[in-house]
Image (cartoon, rainbow, N blue to C red; front, side, top):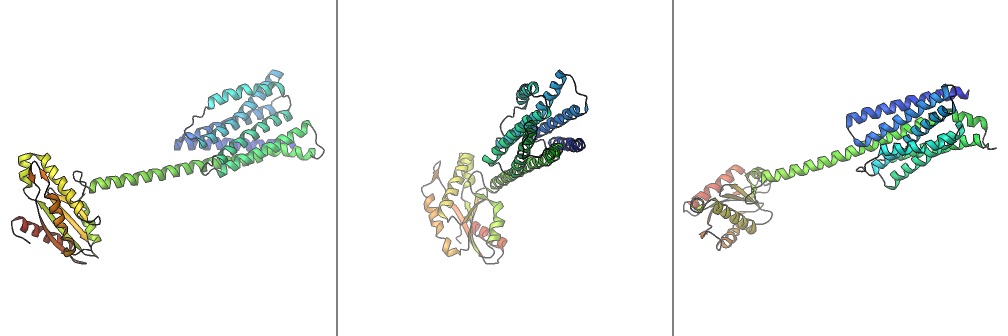
Length: 385
C-alpha cells in the first residue's frame, strides 16, 4: 500500500516539477527577466533529484560505490534546489546582486559527499535532506520578511509552508531511526509515502509567489517609465511652448490663454520694438538678441506673475492680463519705460510701441488681438492711441 502511494505521489511530483520548470523556462524566455533564471535552474535541479529518486527505487540495489553515487546525486540535486531557491529570494532582496549559482553548485557538490559516504539508509537520507531544506527555505522566507520585499507575501508563505513540511518530514524519518511511542508507525508510513503531494502544493505556492513578485516589479518599472515619459513630455512641451532666447512663452500658448480668459475677459497688450532692424543691421544679430532679452526682462519685471508675457514673433511681444480691464494694467507701461530708460545696447536706447485692446467676457479673441495689433501700428507710425 505504502509503495503504491509513494509511486503515485512521486509521479505527481515529477510531473509538477517538470511543468513548473517548463513554465519558468517559457516565462524567462518570453520576458527576458534576469531574476527568473534561478527559478528555472532550481526546478531543473528538483527534477534531477526526483529522477535520481526514481532510479534509486526502481533499480536493483547497486554495489556500494554506485549506491553512494546515487545518494550523492540525490543530495546534490535536492540541496541545490533549495539553495537556488534561497538565492532567488536574495535576488529579490538585492536585484543588483550577482547570484553565483555555479559557485554554489560547486560548494553543494562537495558538501554532498559527506552524507553520501555516511548515510546508508532511506530514513537517514530523509532526515538530513529534509532538515537542509527546512533551514534553507526558512532562511529565505526570513530574508523576504526582514527586508520587506514588495509583493513577497505569497513567496514567503510558500517558503514557510515548504520549510514546515520539511520539518515534519525530518521528524517522521527520524522516528524510523529512533521510534517514538507517541508517533504511530503506520501513520508515519502513509505520511512518508504521500508527502510528495504536499511538497508539490507548497512548491506551486513558491512558483506563484515568484510570478507575483516579478509582476509587481514589472508594474513598478512600467509606472516609473510612465512617470519618466510624462516628465519628458512636460519638458518637451516647455521647450516647444517657450522661446529659448528670452525664456518667455511663445505664441503657441496664446490660444490656450485666450480660452482661459473667455469667461473672465482680459486686457491684451501688443508690443513692438522701434528701430530693431536698424540695431540688427548696424550692430549685428548679437546686439539684436541682447535687445530682445533686455526687453523681455523688463516686461517680466513690470507685470504681475499671473499675467502672460509672450514673445509673439521676432521683435513683437504680447501681454495678456486675464480678468483685468485696461485702466488697471496700463500703468504697468510706465514701469516698462522707466526700466528701459537706462538700458543701452551698443549705445542704442531700447524703445517700443504698444497697442491695447480689451477682450470682453465671451468676446472674440481674434478680434481683440487684431485690435491691439492695429493700435500698436498706429502708435508706431507716430499717432498716439
